[in-house]
Image (cartoon, rainbow, N blue to C red; front, top):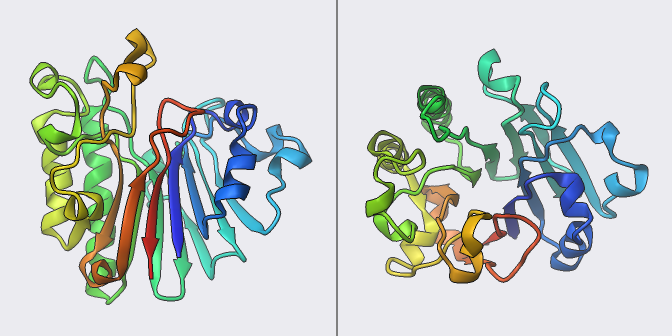
Length: 253
């Protein structure tokens, strides 16, 4: 099974850059996208039609902001939107879909902002998600969490860690929450497979950063421990353009 995640930074812009053609050629079993910045009714029938896929949309209430969508081949067994907390759910950040032997979370984690205005909101979001996942794991569920985490976990996960120690996305308290998920039964499967590999998933549009590969790895697959032995690969497709992020693909039995 192939699961792909990609922050498209605007579904309408991405569609104009070949997003649909790329998805249909790549043919993942599940395609998780973040920061769609649109409601489905703002797209044409042709733009919404992905042959062979059932699409679940969770746009933000605020126009042109946030939002996620998950494309499923054949459709999921069931779908749940949000985390059950209004202050998070109005921003359209979470889709949970059930598959035969695991739950798949497609998540656009909050950005703490340059002025740290939203760091507390972001940390509270992490806390609520972990609370939900702890209960699901205790009930025997297997879980895959993917999406844009808006946090680089380790110094290897960004080009300039020293210069970014006070930047949201690499603050100690943000990194600690990623660590907490690992302590609670999740595995960052890219880093497990490639402990020393330097590869990024996001580059600022400023200063020709992508061409110079001055980036951050902030798009992840966290897989619950019982599923890890079934993981075959995690690929960062950093040659694929169309957004300031690139796709990441999980291959799992």
